[in-house]
Image 1 (cartoon, rainbow, N blue to C red):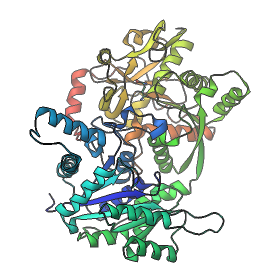
Image 2: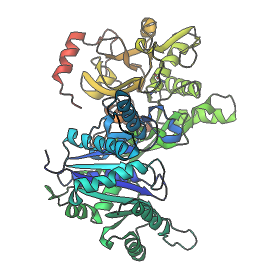
Image 3: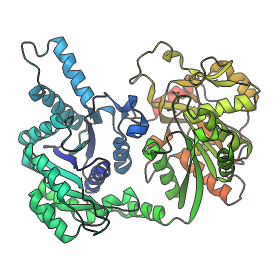
Image 4: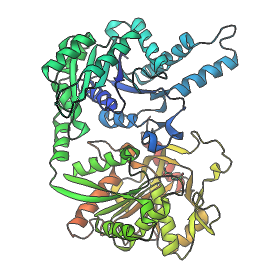
Length: 577
Ligand code: GLN
């Protein structure tokens, strides 16, 4: 337990989406590399209680934590960069803060008082930040404040961190401001004025940054750096650049090279416990930047225009690719376009057949679902490596039911509530639920894998944990017919009430999972599912036979371990979060 916990607060200026989350994660990693126990918090000033009810098209992916939190995608960056597992309390929103203050008020906890933003809301914010610090036992807590300085919603949070400087002390708190420095295309000049204004805005509310990180396409020129220091009221040595690099994973390296780690340690009086060893990280970046091979993977979904909607999947593919020194080229397929019968859809169909792998992305609702089913049919019929994640797996079951098991018009009741064959239906415990927020089957769940299945070959373990986020599942009334017709259920929930993995034994590589293995993938520890999928894609692209077909003698008689045996296995696995 640290004597004094250090808090680093990161704010953003000029505009959003300048990579504040990446800078925050990079700083986390830079400190972790110096031997410190670091944890991270994302503050989101919106009124939603969590990200679960937000459209990924507007806000990017919903990142699911081990404990079932539906959180901001920045938590994904934190987990991937620092190789840590966070919980839902690491994402604080205005919604949560007000909800608890209002609930306390109703219980009479503020009896007699007028409940106000200062001190009640700000106290609640500080309390939440400190509680996370205490629970995690971290020596350094990095708190990223979402949005941009100047947003009305962000004010109570900025006020709270201003107070924390006073309460925790100068040596224990550090403010980092990240803001855009645009380059004018005509004169190629680096313009620092917007950044200056955003620092002014911060200072107006009583926060003087200790460090300024300019987000710029190029490294800062000396003159721009000096100007930022002068107007931002910091020494020149406190100005750094997060310039544009080929992969986000390079940002920790470029920032550490500029001396940000040493600056922070000195300023916070932290004595590094280790000399940063970047060798494995550099090796990972090297394989990302100089791959020896390339595969084309079709990404079939409905949010193909905002790539942040699928960021953990994209990263999981990158991690697997890097491990195999292969660049994963993403071929985006807008599922809705596949639903039509026209020239464009014909082109897409032949494009899909030429891909080295097809991935059916997760999702909700009817839009684009038929297109995904079509893509799955193409993968199945043409022996193209296939991976279906959550909704992608469910639709693979629908496709199989319709085109192989002879259950015409089979569907998920999410898409067609009146289908004659509801092969995918609501989980029993979902039937009564009316509220939408936080009510899905969420977070880490155990699956028991059938020995010698493809899934088992990939994981090399019989009991595995992956995070979930769904309401629907394979309908038990159809298990028998689907299995008889050749669909292999290779992973089950421990109570054997749910199908967790499906596969096609005679296919090159055909795997569907109800889980979201992408959330646990790390740069240096790729997810087994993605690693296997990319390996299959590589072999396919080289015209070789499947590396898995022979290994996995998937006999139909194979059955999962008994419930008691599985429970014993689970207790014997140290699974902490
Ligand atoms: N819509 C599906 C369900 O709720 C799948 C969700 C998902 O892909 N995450 O079960």
